[in-house]
Every structure is written in C-alpha cells, then in structure tokens.
Image (cartoon, rainbow, N blue to C red; front, top):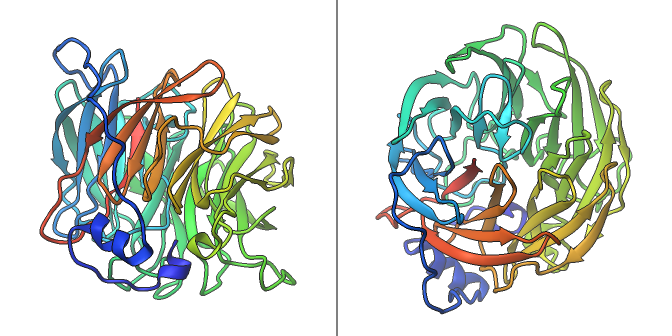
Length: 429
C-alpha cells in the first residue's frame, strides 16, 4: 500500500479524504438492517470479535460478542495502556487471540481463546488481555525490545514480535523502509499471559533497508517461524521482482536457528496463514495501488526444517493490493482481501498441499468498499469478519457450504475521532 502513497498527511474524515485523493466511491450499499438475534447477556468467552483503534493518543481494543447467527453486539472499548501509530500499517496479525499454547485467530489453528495479544506500534509495547465474560482484563504491558511492533505470533509457550524499526510518523509511514532495520524478538509466555524476554532471541530480517516487513507467524507445529518482506530481494532477483519469505527453525530454548530466504512466487508477499496440514498460503500485493488488478495469492509446502517449496503459481484475482488471507477450518476455502480499487474479497479453493484455484474473484454478494483490510473467521468457520480501515467498520459474512459469502451485517467498530487514526487488527472466536 505505502509503496505508492508515500508519506501522506490528511484530515478527518479519513474515508472522505482518501476518496477525494483516489477517486474512490465510498458509498455503502443501501438496504434495511438485518434482524438481530434475540437479545441475550453477552459472553465474550462463547464467541467474540476484537479490533484495535490504533490511536496515537491511546490504543484500545473494541470487543463485540457474537450471537449464534453471527451478528455482533458491542461490549466495550478497553485501553491497552499503550499507543497506536495513528497511521496505516502494511502489516498483518497485529492483534492475536489464543493462549500460551498457540493461536486461534486470525490463524485458525487452535480452539483456545483465553488471551488476547495486542501490539502498540506507537509506544513500542505489547499488551496482553485475559478474555472474560463481560470484557477484557489487562494482564500486563511488556516492552517489545525494539521499535514499532506491528505483528505477533504465539506457539508452545513462545511468542515472537516483529518490530518494523520505523521511526517516521504520519498517516502512511514508509513501513520497514526507514529508521532502524526490522527485527524479530522472542518471549516466553506463561499460562496467565505474562511475557518474559528470551535473551539472544533478537534477529534481523534480510538486513535490507527497503524491507516492507509485513507479518511474523509460527507454522502449526511451532517448529518454524515465517516472516514476509514485501519489498526485499534475494541476490540476483530482478529489479521488478520484489518480495521474499524468511523461515527460521525454532530451537528448544526458544531462540532461532539458521535463517533461510526465499524469493516469493509472485511479488509483494504480505499477509499469510496455514492450513492444518502446514501448507503456507500467502497474499501477494504486486505493487499495491501502482499495480491495479494484479492482486494474487500463492501456496507453498513448508517443511519442519524450514525449507519452502512452491505448490501454486501466483493465482490472480483481479483485485488491487491483495494483502490479507485466511483459510477455513476444514482447509477447503481461502479468502483474500484487496485494499484498493473498489475493494474486494476473493475466494479460493485450497488443496492440502497449498495449491490454489480461484473460485470467485468477487466472492461477497455486495460491493466491498475500498479500505478492505484484516480478515478473521469464527471458530467454526461459519462466519467471516472483515475490517474496513477507511470506514472503521466490521462486516459479517455467512460462509456457505460451497465457500460462497453472504453479507448479513455491518457494524461501526471504531468511532471517528478528532485526530487521524487508522484501525487495524481483527481476531474472532
């Protein structure tokens, strides 16, 4: 996204400002609001959706309880006691739901959903919450041992955070292209959520100044750590072929072994996830807004020694700036969002080895607005939730047996504020 936009500063309202700048039509499809499920006492432990305000004046997590029909009921907003960056971040998994054992969202790998981990990009800290019936209880705020944490992952009692190193402020900061070199750092995670830094765990990424770092995540076994860099290159990589995927073998003490760097199948690998067989599934930006209609996704086989083998070519979806990807619990269907253009959600048929086939370039049954960003599936994969970072809304889609999507609701997650803030992160249970 930032490759084209540069360092933009604009005024509120955000959606209107960017609509003028890019000629975006920001009108939401009209129609009567759907009927809600019968009122009941909300319980975040039974089903919930969370997102971050990313405000530089005080980051907070907004919490919704989820009804049986997938609709949401706002429970409240809970301060992280940290600050957001206030700008758009070219990152994924800045907010993760799970436990010390591993993640349940956005990567649908475990059913545990008792802890919520939030990155505070503006204060270089990580906040951990315990999910309770009527709200979130802050467990602790831990420094990230780096600058500007933007992505986090947890597995087998170990957490790693991606510090982008970015020191430039603004609505659209360069992201991993100025300031300090991006790095990852490890922590031990107690069952109660407390984080303890692991000495010697910090590792630089490709060490390239123009990194475009996007996401860090463990594979399902927890034996390999994966990082995407949208704009970095391997030796000999063509000038117009940007983007690498890094893998690290995780040692028993939580530190990392040898770093492997792979040229991505396409260009601009961004957000990614895994199926239950361990295949890696990535979105591909292909120059973001500067590459209209070129968005794609690709698949890989990831071995426990960290070796990566492509199993799918880049499968284009006609969207612009494809950045986030999730896969259903049964592993059959994947969904990717494209941020620019008209905005869209595209659906894919996913093979057990990570091979991909485009099902529907515009899978949603109504137009998805520009600013379509983070995705998360409910724990049973019956509902897909999508954050719009321009509008501050969360859309709810019902997932059909054939992978089709039907919009059933849209909620205002983040209220407009006097100062600019671009919400980010989405996790559901």
